[in-house]
Image (tube, rainbow over all chains, first blue to last red; front, side, top):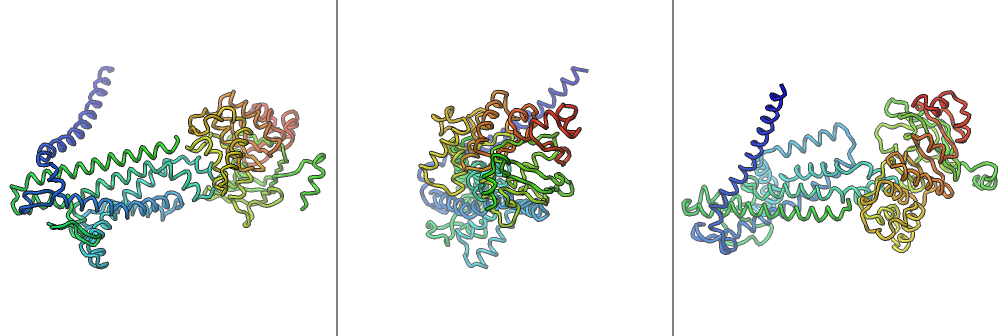
Length: 285
Length: 264
């Protein structure tokens, strides 16, 4: 009887272990695969020059610049709005039907396919607001896509702040706004940054939302203003693999692009983690 | 002001600082406080005792309007601070909470430095004179009998203090905004016996300057620190009187049973 129990214990534990190793293993396989094929083309020229010879030679500089602009642009728009609305729903809105409606709508927003965001962005920003295919239209579309994640992580971060700290602050005559600004928000901020990290990763890799709103097949020069079109890494990768002038020859370029994209996401994650720790230290827990 | 005449006769009759007249409180349809008439006098300690769920903490929170933060709470009757109804529309709740400080059951310092914890109440009330703030932080910590232990480490996180020190820090924090009344909700229940006796000694010192109302589960503590005692049972104020009278000759049999440990 006892050995049977032990056996099940052993079996189930090992199944869990194998499955979680598989998941991590798969991640490493992807990274390894991309690195092996991509790292060979990475050099200074690849990172800093324009594509040449029908994109079979040269570099991917404009796509890097474009993706960077889109990441920053979309966050400039989505981060403040997302954080403020997260604060509103968690701190100000009382439990009600309206609140749960708002919550479920935020969740639904997160579930909308990104191509639909792309279509919407084209209809609103590109056509209706006459931004044309431009960095601003692309950034706003990507920002919309990132909003629900930022709102939800902000709410979750605020929820972890102990209620007793709020009441302690009110008891000293602080207003609600003062309490949020001086006590609640600084504690929650490192976790709110997690939302920023997650959505930056997502934004940098999205292809569908930029397809109709900003991305260019090939541009001979860098964007000069926010109303210019731009190249972007994920779309460039798509172009290189499916519709380049000579796909066989541009294949290594595609892997190089994929490698750079992964590295950018990784670097941003590390940077954000560092910021998170920095702000975490400022709060004296 | 009518108060003037009262101050003159303070020797004979203590000045009433806090008073309730037929105070009622409902949580939704639950009648948590029933027709409560109560008085607390200047520079005295009043202990609120009674079994869990009897309404004593809820009653305490009437005086700094902490119950306002909870949904579906309905309050009626008069709750007076210096003869003014604190539930009047003209009352600024933030101002009221400056006058009526509170110390909670679990020490709840902010995740800031020791200095900033005490300075917090001053800063949120618009004081920015750093000289004044420094002086006030020092005197408040002295009043809370914590100064000697922390004076060299004011920049250290409040979370590095022991539980008892944290609670005294919370007391210092409350004192910094110069309240008239100090509400204490089981301030020693999460502390060890030595820290508890520190807090009790402190209460004894503090009543020279403040009017204190303290909720406690500990009968000995109520006996040691308080001048007056109110016994609550199921939302009723059963008996209110001097601590000596309540503990030696309670008039109500429920009070007697509770004090002698027969229930609760």
